[in-house]
Length: 234
Image (tube, rainbow, N blue to C red; front, side):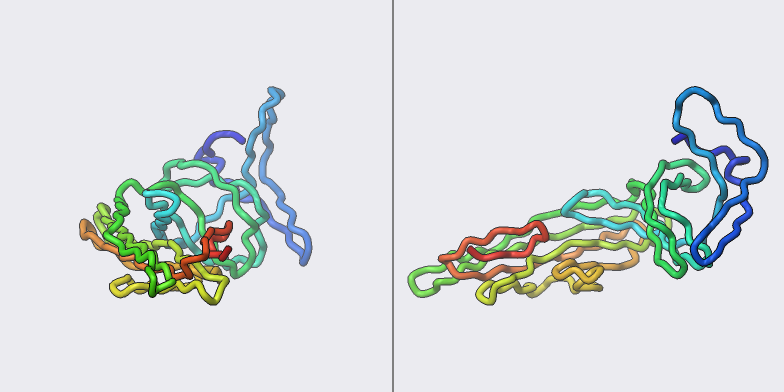
């Protein structure tokens, strides 16, 4: 694809003719295609949406906050899946591949790392009990704190996503520990064990999320994580 669109290209608007199963675009004007063998991008329309910005943090993957624009697509005509060119404050920030926009769908578009939100992940002292002659149970704790500071001049919506193990065996118990920060959602997108914390971060004020949990299991068992990070028993 080519580079960022010019202002004139972004102002182009194609006439749309849509039926129940077909969408056709009639592009205004004429365009010359250079015979240089290069793949090029030619716009057919530019749309504007009323969006809300949110910074999402996934500490298990990155120590950065990633800016996303969210909105509900209310148009009657779907937009086919493809590659979009993204602009932030009028400046070109890159491209993103997206699924189709269907009427009524909630859309989230990535806009890169937000350098004005700082994230620190700190491991706190955790207790592990290997059991003894009397107790045949092993307990392992995870105590992790996410420290987040917003350096924007105004409050910023923040989402933090992490998870706890999900046991598939009755003798393996996962418990949230006292002092843990209550999540806003416990099964994000219907996925067991995936937690979401949502809050508004005021400028230059530290917000801490305490992610504490323990796993208790028989001493003669060995735990391993599957691809979906559920605890399994051997």
